[in-house]
Image (cartoon, rainbow, N blue to C red; front, side, top):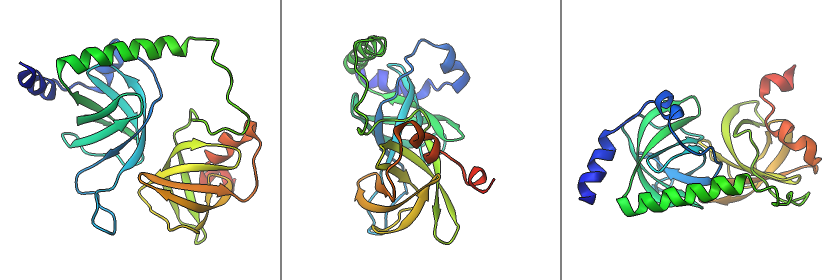
Length: 221
């Protein structure tokens, strides 16, 4: 029964427009994913950061740094949901819609989890983050600018007044000087699905997202 349900799920692909009309939860949950045929210099399958935008127990829209192809199978992991096997059913400019392959029991658990997250979003008792804490910005994408003037689109994992965590197709070595948006800094650490950049100067919390998300065209204006 569960195997048959998984097969039906893979076949029941849906457009983004159709999904936006369905009952789902608009929630931002950080995660990671790997695409077939994307390997690092050591021959290991690369992972990239991602973040959910809209989620149901059957499918989700995610913001990503590297967009896969419709029909591709991938593995994803989210801190609030766990690991999924997924199929890309539609693509966006900087994201895609994934069909979630799971058993009936896990789908019921997913439904309860989404109900809890939706209630949590409406809870006014949640306190504001500390001034220097890392936080997830509403803007998901920006550009890296290297010393030679070249630019690379990238995904913002999280940001603080002192630095930013990035996931990107371009994989700079530790020590690389670069700008993330309009904030100049240096790569100080690598991790599984990205790297950390420390700003040359600490930024004001009220300004940091605007500066990090500033495009190369805006900087030259």
